[in-house]
Image (cartoon, rainbow, N blue to C red; front, top):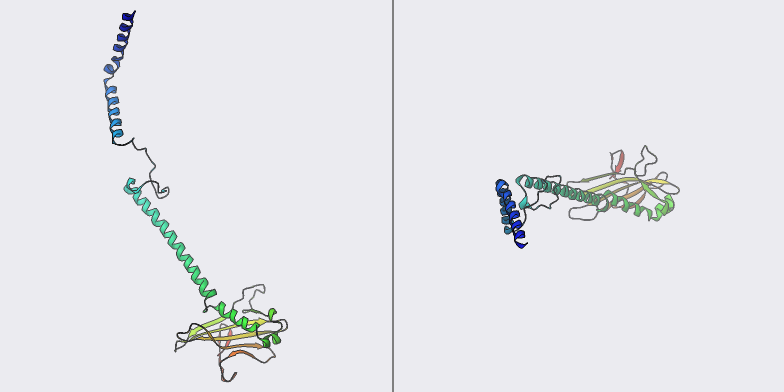
Length: 237
């Protein structure tokens, strides 16, 4: 019985050896693949998986720079340059808006600051309250417009520098109280090296009422005063 089993096993083994003999080419390819796999494994890992080509549109930075081709490096450089340009443009726009806001609203040279300072001065003067009405009801506004519902009316102003380097700022606006309305003219100066504006005059004209001088550096008010027309407004020096 044991001899019969050994004979059958030997026959099966001999039949299995026929395949590599008949298919010798397949055997060589299989052995070559195994050797290549063993070599890659001994060198430190499996073959790298294929990846999608990096372009300007799909680059997310996951692929390291050393693994990029020349074309892919150019795509990444283009994308990063574009992103940097967007950031710089945003910073420039933000800085420009901040500078404009400061110059127009917060700076002592802005028309808004000059206007607010003059209005506060007018509302706090007892003569103006008596002439126009209650101080808290006095409102100030710019020139009349065709749109009667317009809230932001233009305020006429002018700034220039004379031959001595002194800056001049002039403004003209309207005020209205509970009983009357009037016209305000102001002129401020800032000499070379000065940081604050000083009033040359701040006057209020009300129809049928004497002129009210809130500020006046002239020794003889009303004498020797000249005027000129600018932006449809009469400016008194």
